[in-house]
Length: 92
Image 1 (tube, rainbow, N blue to C red):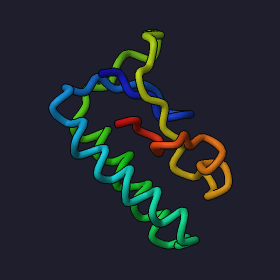
Image 2: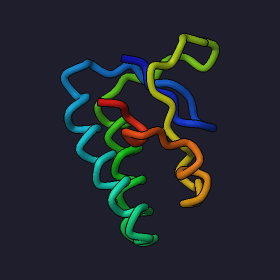
Image 3: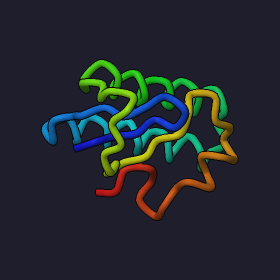
Image 4: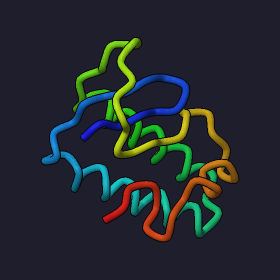
């Protein structure tokens, strides 16, 4: 799976990591719904750090179609809320 972090680039991740990312996405969604800004910020960074740690960065000149697009680390709660689908940032 190819994941894009807005403003940073793309990472190739094995599908086996999807469950771990989805768990963090569920936490992020709960914190957003509860208006927990501090929890939201912490979990967003944990989600992005997981992508960076578990994935392999693609070259900057590579423009592969991204299966997941995640917000930039400094995205506001409102910006992320606008990106959310019914299932959070990560479907499934």
